[in-house]
Structures are given as structure tokens and as C-alpha cells.
Amino acid sequence: MIDGLLSLAERVRVETTNSLDAAAQSAQGQYFTPERAAALIASFPALPRQSLLRVLDPGAGSGMLTAAIVERVCAESSAAAIEVTSVESDPSLLPALRETAQLCEQWGRDHGVSVTVRVTPGDLVLMQTGLGAELGFDYDLVIMNPPYKKLGSASWQRKALEASAWEATNLYSAFLAVGVDSLRPGGQLVAITPRSFANGPYFGQFRRRLLAEVAFDRLHTFESRSTVFADTGVLQENVVFSATRGGHRGSVVITSSRGHTDEVVARTVGYDELVSPADPQRFIRITADKASEEAVRVLEAMPASLAALDLKVSTGKVVDFRARQNLHDVPQPGHLPLVYPGNLRQGEVHWPRRIGKAQAFSLVEESDRKALLPSGYYVLVKRFSAKEERRRIVAAVWDPSRCDGKPVAFENHLNVFHKNGMGLDRELAWGLCLWLNSTVVDRYFRTFSGHTQVNATDLRSLNYPDEPALRRLGRSTGRLPEQDDLDQLVEEMTQVPVTA
Ligand SMILES: C[S@@+](CC[C@H](N)C(=O)[O-])C[C@H]1O[C@@H](n2cnc3c(N)ncnc32)[C@H](O)[C@@H]1O
Image 1 (cartoon, helix red, strand yellow):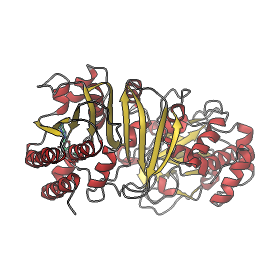
Image 2: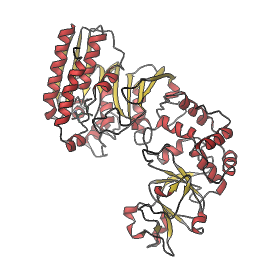
Image 3: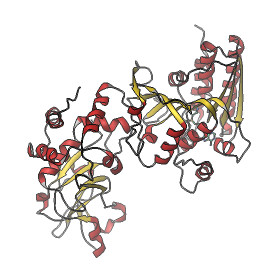
């Protein structure tokens, strides 16, 4: 069998990846797209009917996405010519990129399409924000697997993008912003990125602008974190999407697969299901299956906000490396309980517990009192769930009788539900804990969040049952039931069947 263009490019990718120094690879985000994932990404755009297709591949690496789109255009499009501008900032990758470019041009000659690949050394952000020799605009298609790196507020990339009213807190969102700006109206952006821009305040301004500029056409999630970039060490949860600049906000095709080799499950949702018009934060919800669509329906029907319940959620106040003088491994008389995520077990807080973390807090200065909450019931949610945990939202109740009603200190890796700085009563605390641990809430959370991280803002954005319903739930049990029993209780309470 004769190898396809992408298989030829795959050899260049593997050779190039093997030649990279692991530390430099990680520092520069040089994780190249494997063949199958590249083919999936290149399958996303609708190929426009025109004789010349102008494509930008920013951060081209060894040229996998360039090869993938050239192969597809040669096989499927009526275009007589394709011109790809492949930009790469690392000079050491240019020989590999040139090799792939030659393979592409040869492929074009063999298939009757005029293929030109302009290998362009340089920094994408510099060039497209007017600070360097620019690459031109009005592209029909931008296809990218951008590098990831946090950008501090003083970084030049952030400042350069602020000038065109984009807020880029990460290099990948900077690439997306530049990608959008480089498109002609009606042009398409296709990208594989982390899912983190879809929710949360950190990407809030970026997301609003992105949603205003483009209409999403298709979104794909990988259910498993590690399979897509199996040979590259990337563990981020990724999403592939295509979006049209100034496009019509109609229906969106959502697909998901376990890795890039499994069968793809597809469904079509209305635009309002992707981005609810009622959501001021403009979260992008990915309801990849019927059960998550159902979870959205259940949660949206819940009547109460956290504010209406007169509750608040904040992160634990003890940042342990800043409070070393206050921390003690073993509680002594006069010490106060200190709770870490490791103390949470089966809906309860086991304290003290041998978890390799300090278990007691002492007051050294008067100002240390600020780290404490008065005696009472508190509902705690881990900010970071372990990968092996079944649920993303892991909640437990702090019971004040564990320490004779003393004030308590919660460590910063916990979210703490409280009543304006005071505790809740037992019934309400258990009701809330059960609700948060339910499958329906977990599924809903996964529609907008791709991380194992649960922020206080995420918890604030949820709808909750009203107080009488939470109390009924809390009265039904004083411990965490088995998951099926818990889901049954929640289903009865919400009166909306939760389909499996
Ligand atoms: C995640 S890799 C993906 C490479 C390729 N697109 C692929 O899919 O295999 C990102 C690439 O962007 C390059 N890069 C990083 N910062 C850049 C910048 N400011 N301008 C252009 N390229 C950059 C890196 O060297 C790396 O090759």
C-alpha cells in the first residue's frame, strides 16, 4: 500500500519528537499532533468552493496540520490551488517543517492541485499584532494546535493583544485571538486546545470576545485525557472545534470519543444549549450525550441561587506555606482543628487523620484568628479531585462535634460553604452535601468544565434546590448513602427523572 501524505508526515513528526530535549519540549509546548488526531482536526472545516484556498498554520511544529489539510483538500475539494502559511518560531524545527512542506507540494503535483507551503520563521504574536513582518490577513482557514503557557499581565504578548481588545491570559488563547483576527469574514478557525477557556473567570473576557466574533459549528471532546497525545506526555483535557468568523449561530454538532481511534458519538444541539442566553458568564457547555443534556435540564429547573439560600462559598483561608508557625502535625491541648482535602472521606471529615499533613492550627498572633471559622457545620468541596476519583465534585460535611465545638481552620485547597462567615445547621449542611455529591450535579459540572479543578466561582454559578427541598434531603440521612441510593433521593427531590 502506498502511504498517504499524513503517514509520510507522521514519520517526520516521530523523528522530530525523538530528537527533542524533553525539558525544552515541555518549556516550549512542542507537542506535535499525532496522525489520527491531525486527520480528525483537518476533517472539521467545511471546504469552501473557491479556486484558491488560503490557510494559516500558526505554530506549525513539524507540519502535521499543514499535511493533514493538504491531504484532505487534494482528496475532497474542488480547489485548484492551496497556499499554506506555516509559521514556526523555533529555528531548530524549520528543517523538519521544510521537509513536510516538500512532501505536501509533491503530493499536490501528484494529485493535480497546486500546493504552496510558505515556511515562515518567526513569532506569530509579534507578526500578527503589527510588531513584526506580518503574514497577511483574510485567510479562508486557520488550523492550529497552539502552544500552552500562562501569560502574566506584564507580558508583551498580553499587552500587544490588549491593543486589539483581546485579553489573552495564556499563549493558546493569544494564538486563538490572532487566528480569529487573521480570518476573512466567513473564514473558519479550527483548533485543538485545552478545554479551560470554556468556563471560569480566568478566560471570561476572552470567551466573551471569541463568542462575539465567531459562531461555533462543531465541537469534539475526548473522554479520556491521555490517549490523544499518548506518545507526547500531554495530560490536558482537549477539545477540537471549528468556528466561523461572523457565522450564523444555528445548530452545533457535538461529538465525543474515548481517544482519537474510537468510534465517534455525535449529536446536534441548538446554539442556546451550547451557550445559554441566560448565562452572564457565557460558559460553553459541551453536552456530549443525552444524560448530560438531561442534567442541564434538571439543573436549569432548580429554583435557587446560592445567594437566595443566603449561603456563600469561599476557599479555605489557610495557605500552609505562609502559616508554618501556626501548623502542628499532632493536635495538642489549646490547638484548633485544621482540615485538608485528605481529611474528606465518604461525605464526612475524618479528623484528626494521618495524611502526612499538619492537623492542628495554633494562634501565634491575634491576626491569626482571621484564618478561622466559628464552630458550626460547614460543607467542603475539594478544589482538585484526584484523577482516579469517580466524581469531579467531592463534598463532605464538617461536624463541629468532632472537636467539642471549637473554631476550625480550613486549608486553601478546599472550597467552604458558609452562612456569611458562620456555620450552617446540620440538616441544611447534609442536604447541600448530598446534592453536591449527586451524579446529576457532577454531569452538569462536566458539561462546562474540563478540569479536575472545582473553583468557588463554578460552585457559585450552579443552581440549587430551594431550602425546604435541601432540608428534606438532609433529614433523610446523616451520612453519605451509596451513589445509587443518593441519586434516587435526589431524583425524588427534584421530581425530574434522571436518565442513565
Ligand atoms: C503544540 S505545538 C504544535 C505543533 C503543530 N501545530 C502540530 O500540531 O504538530 C506548538 C508549536 O508552536 C511553536 N511556537 C511556540 N510559540 C510560538 C510563537 N510565538 N510563534 C510561532 N510558533 C510558536 C512551538 O515551537 C511548537 O512547535
